[in-house]
Length: 356
Image (cartoon, rainbow, N blue to C red; front, side, top):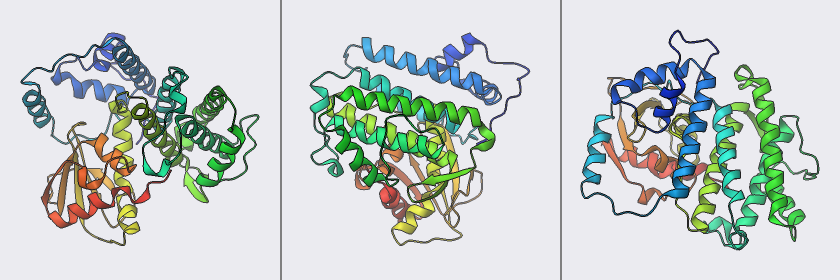
């Protein structure tokens, strides 16, 4: 994903951004707005902030109403119209994806009640955990990210650099402390990492850092942190009876594109290897499609008219939730074309890399 600092000849106006963030733009203007957003990282950040603010406001004031009887048919018709593959020109930078997801999670935590913090989590790997525990877990991994970027958070004394070990150390330290301490550490770590990522800029996202016992590109670590934060924010929403919330479309586009690049590793973790075979992911909620070479990690390109071995049509948010083991492959609604067995193997392998 590349973004630049060039000033577009026809920049996006504030009015256009507001309309686009509310999904109130005319369909024929979407591609033009996306191209102009691509040329202006600042506009992308403002669009995501506007979209997030609108979503938070809507969640605060919305009342339950019965959906229109023809809503499903209209949504399906719109989805079909938007299935034309598009290049991911409007996807956000990993820096912005990371910033937005951490900000959304912190806002969620600030609204929790005293009773909410003690509510149990439902995923099986969190047996016995409360909302407080999972926030400590988030803070632990965010402070690790800050450590590896060279901006450690004052007061955080954990030394473990593996996921489970660091979480165990942090939970022991936070036992008996008020939840506000965990939120403060998460917020401090988020601010430290955001500032450092912005200071480094796009040009340094390919630099590697130590991450969970190996080396990973900074862009990968930032997206992993964003993905994990979204996942656990939704865990908290479920625990407290709130609706799950997908990332803004530009963030989800970047996450889905990155996830496609890891499909060969997911398959390999299940003992399956398919060098030379191509699978097309068509994401109905994004209007985007990519062709994935199953023989090479990160070999993702915009879908073309060329034949592929299998095509999977699904909702990107649901695919991502399956990758995080929140939707079982058997429960994932998708349409497969071409080699059904190959498509099934890919779907079954999606949660192969899921961790706490």
